[in-house]
Image (cartoon, rainbow, N blue to C red; front, side, top):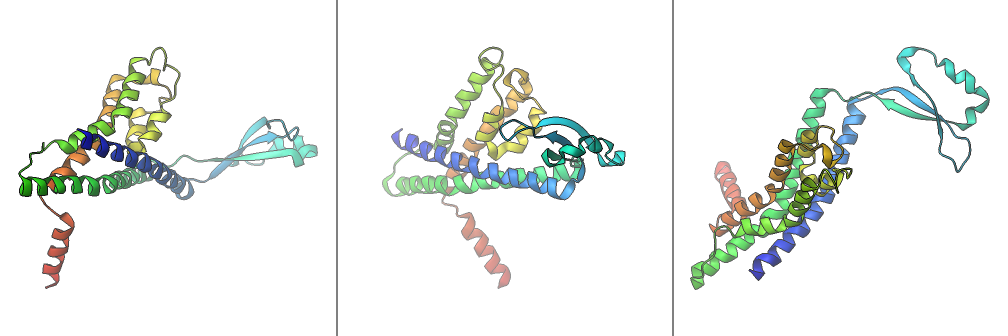
Length: 244
């Protein structure tokens, strides 16, 4: 049991690293969407009344409306005017395509961080069984993964149970970012809901399903290691046979 707990703690550490890396990956893909598939369509105009005060909103202007006539009203204050660009929405097809690609990369990152360690655990247990006749549960990888997601599972359950009281106005963002290896899935399912009070039962079920990606990956990697299968060696062998 101690060995499982220690391995789970290591997996949990990997999940934190993956969450951080996937966050930046998702941000990069969203910046790519905006840079390639949107354009400036206007701006919001603000007036800065002093260095310490927040700029005061004046009006919104769109290029399709022709000349900005309101700008002349603030000609004497032009040095204190601040423009914030308004960009068009990303079209549906590139938005979905880049979101899918982003999600695939995030899952691949999760697998790359978990697979090798769990494969080694499985392979070590296989050697111990082969040489010393020790017995191990074939679900050891699953147990390791389940314990690793326990903090997120407890938080999600607490948020859902108290979503009409304690967590009613709490943002879903914390759960989204802490599990950003499934960022695009969570965002797609959430559909604009900002707080836990807005979460429906079917959405909650998907959130739980997202958490179980980790134990599934852990179990698959453990079983492959326990069966003493090296995917890397098999791929190298196949490639060498093709060349030969």
